[in-house]
Length: 404
Image (tube, rainbow, N blue to C red; front, side, top):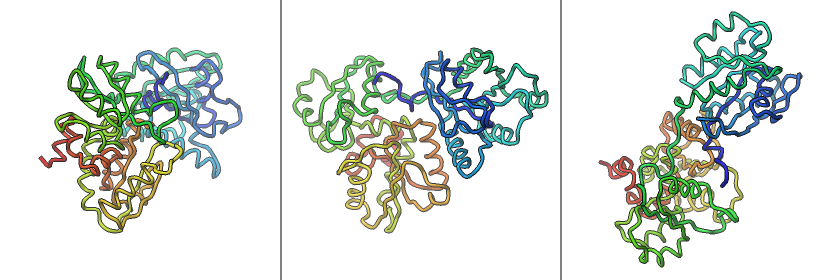
């Protein structure tokens, strides 16, 4: 991996009316054409995403979106996709013409985002034209940056204003944050099976390796069938073993019971979501009523193999060990508010391809409706009889599972 994954970048989303200058602003920020610009309203149909390094913010992803006032049936769908970007936004740029009155859609959007305590910058485009005094008066409590896309002025000031928001952003913790110290030895067990991507490791493994290097740890990376040979030959006891959840039982059989053990998926349950909430979801497994609906929720598109973990392995184990009379649905996004109420439980993937903000939006929706949730790693740990052992590195979650 030679660049920061999109889900780990700061997400900056451009919103505004059609022809407010969003796409021109994107092009000026990147100093090249990354978004199509036209005088015809509605040129941007689907969100356009482009990444750069931006000073204190580090790697950031800018998202150009369709206008609030898009028209027709397709326009309504584009507006829906535009608003979906709110879930991932760390910084919101409302792009509006300096010389025109503030539109009702803009007012409602600002009020909604302010009530949600979102980080907002207002970009006044067409700054070379006369200002609308009433608009500036309404916006006086917001951070304003005036730019002229035509004359390319104000762009550097906008970059500076964005960098000054660095302290307001909630950053994700790293995979092994608080779990290791300098000079620790950590063993990573990474199966190479049909589901593994050809010629590379999966994202949670890559991020964990980089994080361990950043923390000045030594890492031993091996496949599950090699662990039994190398473990007793290690010069010291590893601080931690991190394994793929699908080989929990094999790994546990090859190491002593006092060896700290967890999985990449459980690391990401903490990193991306709410580990303690997911642990409570595990506790709800034994009470699953007959006829329950279970949602398997994945976050990315991938080619599913014959023994796919989400669509085959987990449903099979669930029916064998929890409740045979259940119905499974599979999706890459949460259903709408009415349909979500039908589910007893949601089982999430690790979420490595989504931002923590996006995952927490899901979590908060599920909490609101009283729906149980967990992730793949926790379910497989439970199915292999390894709870609470694999929670020992996380004291709060460990105590919740033990019922203390």
